[in-house]
Length: 132
Image 1 (cartoon, rainbow, N blue to C red):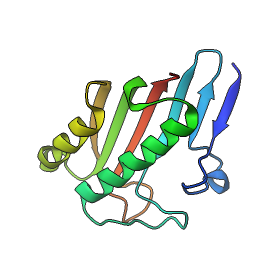
Image 2 (cartoon, helix red, strand yellow):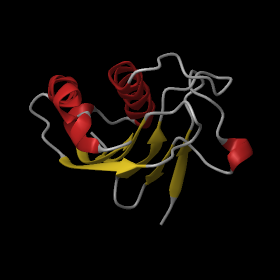
Image 3 (cartoon, rainbow, N blue to C red):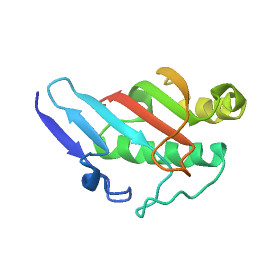
Image 4 (cartoon, rainbow, N blue to C red):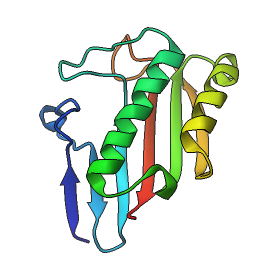
């Protein structure tokens, strides 16, 4: 396996944590995208609602897909983590996700969790995509 590290400059620097925003396995043309959260360059959230953070997370995911040479249409799998009981938020999250994904329709798993990257982080999305 040969890998290419992807770290778009507009996203927070993950190197102090020992990670990249994405890694491309060049042998299989697969993009593995680290969990995207609503963080600016200083690790601060911009929204304090699940819906607001989900929109920012999807914008960050798009930035990583673009920097990787992939796209929403090439998403293979999403894992959506939300702080708390997923069922309490799915009604508000589903329309946002459906609009973002359009006809892409990747596999998707939603998981309610007790904690994420910071106490203010409410949503995180990890993804796998093919190169376009």
